[in-house]
Length: 227
Image (cartoon, rainbow, N blue to C red; front, side, top):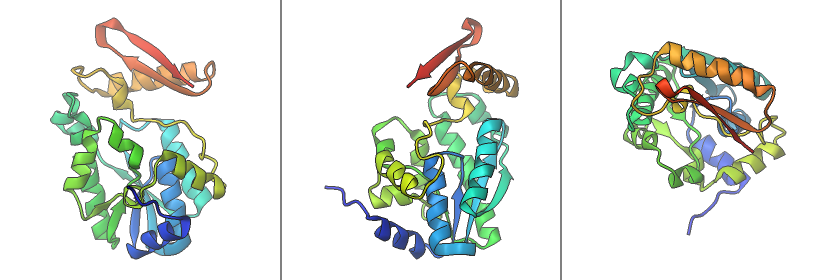
């Protein structure tokens, strides 16, 4: 049976890390982590957003807004994801290569800047899906920590806490990076990723809820709407 931290226990868990660099993506998970870190670590916490062609401009802006709202120092770190040919080949291990490269750079930055750990927002629900990136994160331990997994929190518990802390993203639909929109086997290129982002931005004013545009190469793009 999984033991689930109370809010107080979770904050003590965050405090125990001493200092944290929060991998801030612009979603509810990382925003809740950032809020918790500010509450107990103050200036010993920083939010770091990994910036590359895989990050939609709207999510980058969301991360900036969240950091300001939470009151945490915010750093944007260029990670050049597409420099890795294993990643751009876009096979089923894509997420592994992305997380391996990206969080290695985040950990190196954090160490140089004087932060003991990098915290990321994986939760208990993530264990139910195919997520090769989680394997990469476990290989980078102990520099990379996953407080929600350690606390036994799932997405519903995170959303509950975010709502209690009045975070605007408490009910924000889950989002994935632009690479997830491109079918396996199609090379990840700046042009393909930009086309997906442009298509989603054009369709978003006509759709409520979660929206994702899928790139299928010669077959074109397909819009998926999720409530």
